[in-house]
Image (cartoon, rainbow, N blue to C red; front, side, top):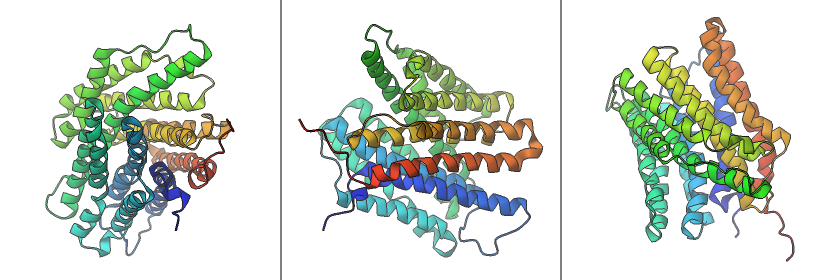
Length: 398
């Protein structure tokens, strides 16, 4: 019996799952916000944790890990020349991810240690498979990515340590660690693919035009600061020290982006999305620096600059690009899909800025930001469901 097409490749199942979850989970969060704003209450919630912690956890360790799984199950075979994961592994990994989402959603009726065990299962299994592939063709720059996956797992462990009662105050630090580790992945992988794809576009359009400039010192400083920031937050370092590291991450990664010839992305929405995602990463680190150093805005608002802006934009850019190439389709998208990138960036700006300039409009900001996010990922689902769940494009005859 043949497996359904959406289970035959990691990017198919996990990108589809990520898109669906991006809509459903934020819709659930928005519903709770509306009830809370109206003074209503849910008499018997299904979740054991505070709603804002559920929201943060599921966006980082639900949505985020789905995109990570889809990306690594697709990219690592390309890096190593090893066969891609078969349907059996994709199905098992997908079942672990789904089980984690249901365990957290129904955590009020389940033993907390069981919830933790189920929710923590996916990334170690994924890391083991990645390690086996990389072992056959090890490259230091790729093997180092396993360390970032370990940081993400560590962040989720910190969350569950508090939810099981083993600690008193580690859940929020675990959320910060997970988000900042995913942001560091963007600094590393986005820092590879964005200039590389830009160079390809320039070579195709005008081989004589200036190519993206690599700045080794900025590369090292930007990546190192990005990687260190999560563990330093988890260790509860002082805000001035965290602000200094965030400032280095913003300045160094900004210097990297400036050299990548973003102007060459005009007319290529897929490439422009990568540049936009990396620009939002720089902005997110800058917002954190302003928050921790000068108390200009609340750290949670700055956090959403990274969470919605950088992670949202870059993951959507990856999820709309990779499936096209891997299913034999041209690397281009129409205006409606291109609009989805702008909607996510706008969702981040509304969430960060509107409550700061108009505190009385807090609930409007929450609702509008969520609606923009849902609209963006609804567009993704409409246009990419046939790509992810349907057959590859027919190859032209030789």
